[in-house]
Amino acid sequence: MTDDDPTARLSSHEITVPGTPDEVWRAIATGPGHAAWLFPADIDPAAGGAMTVHREPYGETAHATVTGWDPPHRFGYEEPAGPDAPPLATEFLVEAAGGGSCVVRVVNGFRRDGEGWEDLVEGAGEGWRMSLTVLRAYLTHFAGRPAGSVGVLVGLGLPAAERPRAAAVLDRLLGIGAAPAGAAFRTPAGAPELAGTVEARSPGYVLLRAAEPYPALYAFSCFPMAPGAPLSVNLLARLYGAPPGAAAREEDRWRTWLTAARHAFDN
Figure 1 (tube, rainbow, N blue to C red):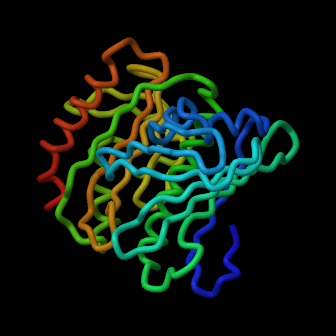
Figure 2: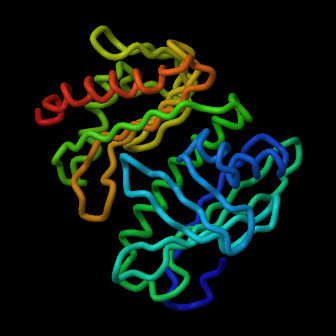
């Protein structure tokens, strides 16, 4: 995907991950792999095939078309972005980097007619920047393992300008404060049980790798889910090797706790 068209509006983010191109490809371009770090998806493995991405509770189910299929190096798709918008394109590029690693680049946005949609491209690009850290952690610690999905969104009703303050409140509630990547953590009394290591963090976002109660990745963000939307606390977690029913129970625990803690963000 290129931005040769002057009306194109695209974002680009890349990250180095462990694994061969074939291993990375399975994580990004197959349904089970995609679900293990991002969203459950049904993918027809060919250009022109159908792709369905189940993004609930963060957004609606997306019905996309595969536009690029060149295993294990290039995977792309387009999806509707709204009644007045051109198709939203996403492309993964995988390149071997030596030493058993690969560089994964995600290009996302509008190939043409993107004027006026810069806010959407910027927000989607930030979402991909955060998501790529989950991909790296999955391939580093849980590659090839199926996952149970936990998804929670709790609206805060706060403007986007309040994001730094809201993120600091969330860090305090989780008991991690300003702990850097690599630090050990354990949630405080009253919060759902979670203990492990801070995997990655950036403004408004933290990725936790849990050892207790189950091996898992928990990605927390304070982030508006659409341009102009108020802030929400968003949790995307993937549980690896947990017993049947554990993901549903964890989702209920976290939704209940975050909803009850909503008032803390008003102070």
